[in-house]
Image (cartoon, rainbow over all chains, first blue to last red; front, side):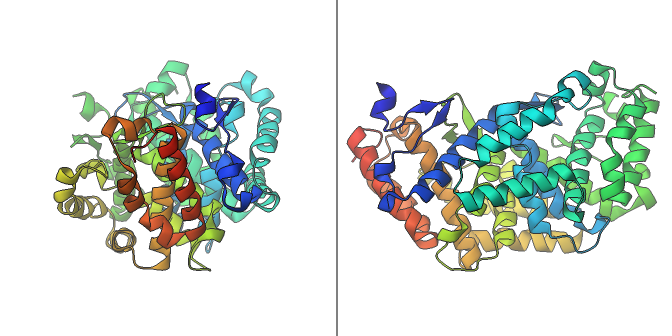
Length: 220
Length: 220
């Protein structure tokens, strides 16, 4: 009854827009607003990574915002000059949206990783499918581009995704690495997208990895 | 001692980068990384607005991400056609960063609003001042552009800022409006940037305001 009073009905935890209140009963605007409301749920998806003050885990929205800012900040280090920064940022803002349905998969969890791709494809289908057709196609194609990691923009975007998580691990003294018994070769492997997408930042990462092992944040 | 062991020292809750580990001891890269780490603190700034499932307040980073996505989503409704979307998104990602020092000021709190501008200017000075000179200037100028709300990009950005908060208030059945005894004319006044920056969305907002009053989410 409370839902009805709100002019909304809840569906998989989401919110539905009353089409009678949308100007011209525009199906397009209704879909756009429903998508915007639906992605609010990403604020409840928590990652393994913790905040720098170590008070709690970071959620996927916070991570997405942080790497979108980092893309603007570190643009000069992209391996290909002249990347379309707007496209990179748009990609980064959306890249984790599928976790609303598929959850966050810890990067060193091989078991969960096995069906991750399938879960995420399904999620992309449903979530971007909420949008009007042209936007569903455009947003989905940005998400696919990120996943394929082949264009200069996607490669740089991946570098940002990994670099921020790495900095959080290092500057929280490896709290999460230690908890999971992560070893140096795993981190080096995980950081290859940084080498590929932003070589100078990779040089910095390499030094911090050495330092992390020396200080006991990371197993050798 | 634990700080020293981490190769970092804490300063106003922030993290300092050890320059000896930065490739070429680059002051530029050190500043960029320190800025990125510093802005992690915005994840601790909570707004009055609540999440759609009403479980908790939203933080300023979550809000920033949400309106950056909304800018891409609703671009066709901007009052000026051909706005530079990349610029709008960059502006929105940064617009709340000053709250790290200045805190979030509730929009209907006139007392706190009185010295808000001064507090935020000081914060902008300190925070963007962490960056290398050219980026300090560029990021600050984007922030100033947003504050002045005069360019087509800044006007559309403001519309997004207000529209998302409004939707959260409406779709959580006015929980926050009711708690603060907010009335219809205050909301109409607060939503003027939507009328200015995205007229069709304003039409939708107007209908939802009427509906909110009718349903008792908002006082007349």
